[in-house]
Image 1 (cartoon, each protein chain N blue to C red):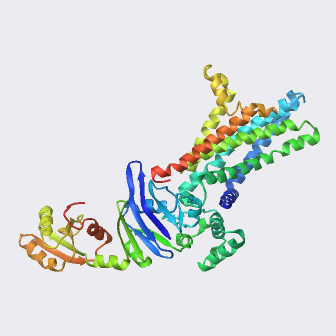
Image 2 (image 1 turned 60 degrees about the horizontal axis):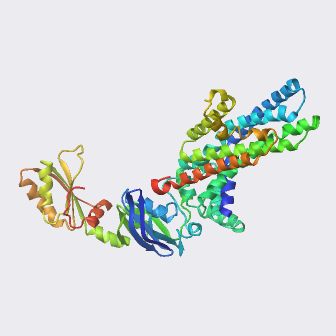
Image 3 (image 1 turned 135 degrees about the horizontal axis):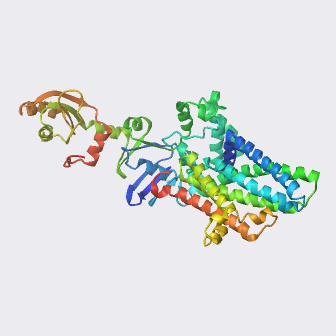
Length: 248
Length: 282
């Protein structure tokens, strides 16, 4: 446990010791701020101020989700790829730490950064609430959904980062499928009719939908946790390949 | 104490380490010596818990690495060949991280880190990032720990100077285990002559190999000087040295040089692996 805490703290220190996380945070808040402003304008102009959850927060949550797709690859790409490149992975894997603790510390530190980014956006509802109070509880569902969504993307990014020693490649291979899924999610017409139900069942985005209107459904929670779990499992298997490949 | 018992490692069908056993007593410094590809790194990585062995076991201070990996790893410090530290951490942070991850308690950690910083003359750079330091200093930082030591090297001089016992590996197998003095005696007993001759290389090789006392003849790659170079290995080459002249000149070739050299580790391997000298090329 002490070793896990040591690595977890070191991972946080590595995040906050590099300029990248501040640039990502600045861009994240700038983009979400932009979406906040335009979505609010839209709501006031075309939503006529009716049903704030459906006509405003839902749009904002879906937009924040898009910003996460762009931000998360930048946060996960270095996690294991850099250790591989530096050669520190070999040392790390000989510390009194289980592979699982290493993966948990790295993913945990990334989730802390994600939670902080998301925490920054709490400013928006606080600000709106002071002007015009609204029902707060559905928003909690939206935030839970964003955390689950971002956590799943991060575990995917960690898995990709385990596969290569190139951060750039890891970032690229993380962003690419997420962007593709996102494109398909708003352009379902481009998907063949036969594969559409499958697409919907698998899509990270369709499972996010209920959260964005204030619903927490068990199957959606399960879907995100299960998907994230699969990528964590995959990451552990990749770390294990050293046993028969003879290198890391 | 480090105890290696019948350690074997396969990568797929490739056997990297084959039934190696040895023991290093508490406080002893031993070297793992062998040419590249002899299985040193694989063996070392099993001792550190990075690889799990295919067969056999590693016991560190009485703790079985396979049965209790975390407890065993807590007793092992590892310095890989490659410089590998987190460049974004300072020297002090690096030491504190390693101490913490290896289970040094909070109360004693700061003292332990300070002790190492002072002990290794790192006080001036303690708060600089590791990435900004020169490699030599990084190497020093990596070289801090040391109790029972297993040093992996392919340099015999290094092994002899630093260690009281030498474990020699070749192609994954344990070849010999000796003190530096014992190995030195084995090396002294081995002679190495460099002979330069102008003549047909194949015939010269067989003529030299036919001399009594010659264990092995090896043709060297050509260099800028005239003639071809051959290396002769044998247990006692003093008498042979006198016979080289007649053997070469008598066949009508030109003898350009005969020079005695200190045998290399490679030569010792030849001696250890193929003491009979009946196999020709490598």
